[in-house]
Length: 607
Image (cartoon, rainbow, N blue to C red; front, side, top):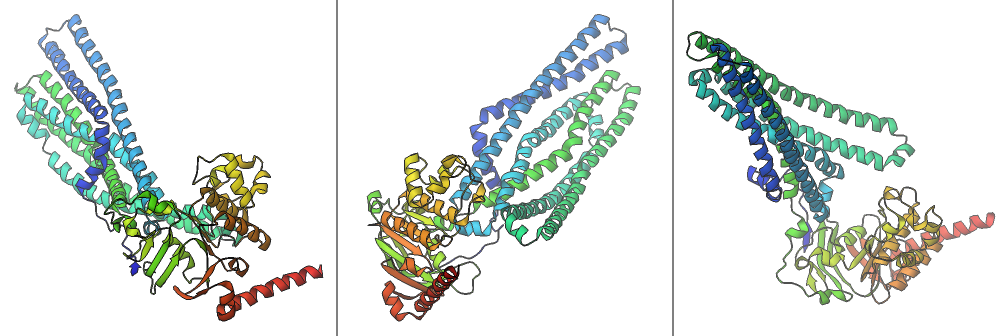
């Protein structure tokens, strides 16, 4: 069976409008009361604002007719003041409620994003670098929050206030309202054209931001190597080049975004000019009163404000929708492991509780875009005991380990775990029974105890110290300023490679799982320490399965069975003694390692 991963384009998954609605719908349902009260407050603000011109009309008409009194004007002024104060309080309320909802939406989308990434397989992670995911979780989510906060409120302002203001204006004079509305179709057409171009340009801006973030992340992670290779200036120039392109794309986007507001304001000014000209003539001819004219002007000013901000609102919403679509494309991607699952029936937990056997039958695997397979026609039975794997660099040793722990998909009927096709088992069921320690031992920014107890956070400090003892790292941890409470920097930069490997081994020993894979994880240790650690590991895994990937024949001499991989195939296998007797590669490695040891002994005798 051959498992091959075809590499899709990063943006291969399309997301339609309904998919975007489904992304935000759960949050809308959960916070529906908050949204309802927010829009209720917003509607109340509109109502109060629209009553103010009525008070102005009454006051102006009474002044024009000579019937106004000081008490009447004071009363109207007080009504305007109270109405404005009430509108201000309610405006504060809807801002808190609606912008608060946008923050909840941002939080829930970020949680969904991280949960989705954690569920995805290595195929996905190989295709989408961490910097791109970080850009989604920061820049894109920020744009979504703005769109569903101020952008949503501004859109409601444009939609509701425009309709209601037009109705009030039409009540005063339908003909004058039609005159004032003449420039609006032009505004709508220009806004649509500009916002469509804005969407395309902002998509390119976000993609460039992903590249910039990934470059910065790689630079910080590899800062020691960059300094040792004296590549600081070149790295700075490369970063500057990416930054300059990001700035240029932003400027091009700002050109379009900057046109929206002036176009809207120009439209409003043209409308105001038409209202002054036509309305003034209607007042002179007695068609409307001067109070009607003042009220009409006030309503048109209320209409002009949303029109002036329509460009800003459209730009913000367009940015948010672009970012939401990018997030939606990521969330729409499926794990190749999940897609291949055939969970036809629940598997009894007790079947997998005992030390499970692993069977590979004609198992093959290819990486995306690879010319030749990484593994080809592997037939292997792995049960309780010690299995050693060796071979030249690139022969497929680590690939085999990654497949065993289900980082990549497997073809049907090619990988069996405890007698079950792995595609009928949840990957978590398999990973819960396998501990894996690789050559690169990842540590996180936490205490030494937290790093060791990652797989068993409930472990006691005594259990943590016992695992550290077995991994021969206890004394070095105790020599740290705060012992097991010492905080390790990200990736354990303050530690040596050997210390990181032994902490990772202690983590695997504390997990105490049925199968332990040690993938060249003793390479940074000296011969004496590696032998000591391996002896402890072997004793801890007695009666269970231990898979050791190594070039160290002293360690391989302690296992039950050794595989030699060559170009993704099992070239030879047997016991250590059998391979020494018949394998040219094994004999060559033994001779080379023995020669290095003799040279080292000779140098020691010279001193």
